[in-house]
Length: 326
Image 1 (cartoon, one colour):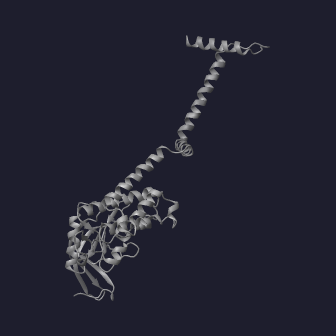
Image 2 (tube, one colour):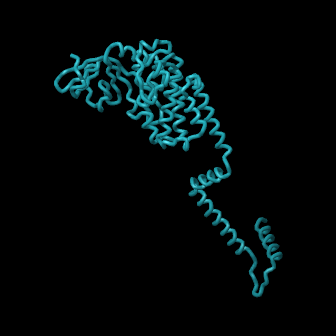
């Protein structure tokens, strides 16, 4: 029996006949968490087959959500009505999307590493002829160690697949102008969406993100979001080259740091090893004290009324040291 989920509250969840007892609040109408897994229920067999086929094609991609099992997902309402639909059990990644992750990881190094990993994943999709078609923060979850994972391939498509066969849902702020106006979906629309996400991540620190990021990194984001598709990166591979080049340039800038930066680095080293340097300082002081004490004991007695003669005293000191060595 198919029920109207918008009018009733669902309170029981099953996957392949087994009741899910450890679940979080459902995501949308059908999806819900099952412990360390995520169960995604589909409205019909066609959409289920569509997404499963794409996920199986991308199963070797580390940046794409992993399929654990397939089967039937059943949702039971308070009045006993049930909704049984095809479902995919995926590995649970995180409920924290890329935008939320960057509220605490917002410096350029962290964001550029995150983006570079995401670009590598999108390059793999590009090589397999697949467009995600809905790149936005909610569809990019981030693990605790900073690895982005793409989810929700329900409206993804093959690069050569006619757009009319797959609806192109509009996501405000992340959709390319030509996709919204003419329904064009391509690698260039994917790159535009990614550029919007980069800018979103940069503004987590401050709306005036230009004050906190290098001109090179800002230029990469701007090139992704050019209104004219021909002015954007023409592939994710081209974008990766610029990201890697920027990383190399920044590394070289650290090597040729200004004197002020060098002094700051020396200060940090001193602060880091302050306890070791303190021990060495006291050890050297003790050694010098013992040497002075020993030299006083080994020197000849000083007679009353003696007037110091620096040259003569030095000769006596050198003769004493020479005698000690012999």
